[in-house]
Amino acid sequence: MHQPSYNRVAISPPQIGSSANTSAVPSLTSGSCAGSTAGDYDSSNGGASGVDLVELMNDRLSSAVDPIPLDRSLARQAQTSGALNAKQQELLELQALAQRRLKGARANFADGMKAAKEVKRDLDWTQKRVS
Image (tube, rainbow, N blue to C red; front, top):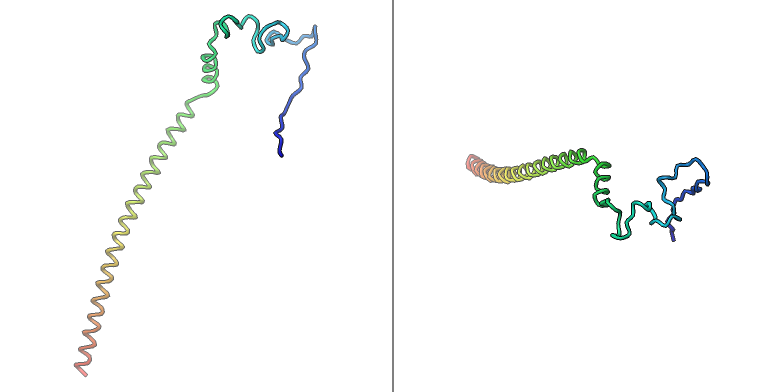
């Protein structure tokens, strides 16, 4: 049975009195919620005070993803799909036209064969009469 492997990175915490900048890292012993500083979390309403998390995530996502190349790709895909559909329809029409022409050519060939047999029969009859 295959077990998924997890890559882990071990990081030592900064030593007391070190010059590492720890102002952005919340302390787990300060009584605050994990992932937020004590001033950011308002326990009375159950969320971050003054911060709309959906709006914050939307702002971060919209700044991380540029929609213009996606729009261009979607437009190019729609144009290509339309051109492909038009060519497919044109091919179907040409195939139907070729089938109609082939049917006509077969009918003409059958008529020609019938006429050739009649001519051969007439020539045979004439040959018998002359000899």
